[in-house]
Image 1 (cartoon, protein in one colour):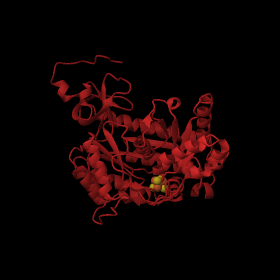
Image 2 (tube, helix red, strand yellow):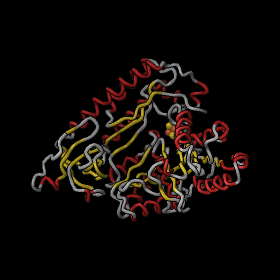
Image 3 (cartoon, rainbow, N blue to C red):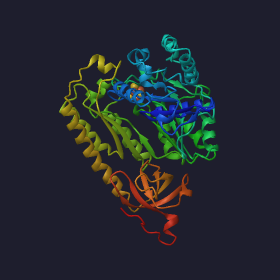
Image 4 (spheres, rainbow, N blue to C red):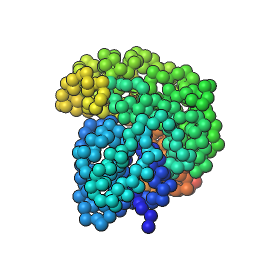
Length: 464
Ligand code: SF4
């Protein structure tokens, strides 16, 4: 009987896409997907170390899995992958006997072979399996960014992720990514376009290009191809209706990129522009290499060139030494930037980073909590104003699937990345439709597709 696997994923889109790649690699080796971890022969924990206490969460999940499978005849094989695996390495094996395989962020292709090895070692007896544990770790910083075409198993029927850059060279003071995902490596444009064509062939109308700093892209196999040119070539692939990307760095936003967002219809009118703080002093300590003035100028330029563009950001509160004055500068920047959405976080020290080595984590937890609440309240007010202003407009919406809260309805996203819920048949999933916006909720919009508004009224059959 075929062996089965289950992957639990923590963290960002890069990790989710890595899980799609690992699922594809395992299935190519004959594994089948299990519907729950306890039904699987192999569980892969694909970890993230961006947030606090990632290692503790991993150990407690390992304990749960071992407790729940202690009576099984065939022991569970557990592989730990992702950023915690890369960061902790062999320490994971010495701290717990629960892990069979450790695979770093740049060694995904080793996973199936190392799992087979773990099963063989176990058959030879516990002492041999233990003695050979170190041979089932692969943390090599491979420069090779190739990945076999068509193997990644897309987890979404509408959107396909395509990696364009691995790693990062920026070394922002708070960030663990350069240590866990290695230095910046660009994928050849030939590989990227092959992935995009595969996405179109398998019926995915939206492509999301992934990288730590996507707008730093230049093709190693074509000197004339920068990120703006890449967007044009991806958008030209027949069957691709929408192109998104995450995340750009503010200091690498060029006029050519702004022109590409403005002029290429398939490129979504949305830019995620992580700012992290509104205080120049804190931005300097963070090593972000821009000032609030340059950042706000960039926003003015974007709004002038691409009217209606939706902007979103990431913000950290309570970075070491952040004063009330620094935080006020952050609130002031948010009032001026008027983001459509924001991800906000309380600072927590991460291993290896410059901040943990050089700066005290001296903002109290109470102050961090108070500041993040004030920031989120302000952002909530701004978001509500944007949403209410869009009532009465018509938006092109890519239908992504059933609505999360009202599964008898459909859900989709505008070009600006706002969720819209509306009535309609399931066959519309994957289509781009004009939808008339009729109401605003705190985190989404409601609407009626124009195709329905010209038919007999269907009404709001299942109003809340
Ligand atoms: Fe981390 Fe800075 Fe690189 Fe983004 S740009 S991945 S925050 S080091």
